[in-house]
Image (cartoon, rainbow, N blue to C red):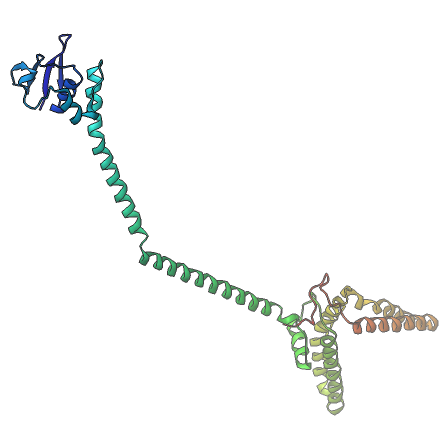
Length: 295
């Protein structure tokens, strides 16, 4: 209930509760003769006629030790007391909100959800591991396919097949076995061709087809064989100038010069054969990787 009273200065003061009015009585701000009105429609009367007010100093001190009002500014005391009475309600509301938020956070991290998250993470890690493994083996397989032609030739048929497969390939490297197996194939082809000519002369055209078919891959494999020892493929053309000069001097019947360039040409052939028989470099050179490497 609202109470109004008139202070010593003649001002009309309003309080919101009987306890606030009692505090003013205890602080001697209101005495028994102070005019007080209870409620909005109440009549003005003395403070002693208000039920519930105690004017005994001893009883008031026992019941209201914490509500002693300061002498001076009554309005600030009343306003401060009202705020103090309302504060616990606000604090209680904030405390309830904190509890609700904490409960929600706990619900978000329930054990079932944590286990589910761990399982999803484990599945994702396994998938990534499988992808990495698959990519690794795919890459290795592709490398094996790319390097299949650069692997060691282990047999005569492999060498012949590989040389025809690299018909116009003058790049890369070739091992000694690859070159000499293909050279053996050409020698055997010549022998068979000449044998057929002696049996049946019209079969000469078969020998010519064979020579045309093998001349280019023979040159290309010789170039790759020279690359294997880190030499240019043009080294196989070393005997050609001496052979041309030897032919010219033979036609002009200059026997001395013919013999000289014949010897020079033979020495060039010997040097070329030595190069073709030389073991290749074990490491990678400017022409490519070692053809004798294993898969």
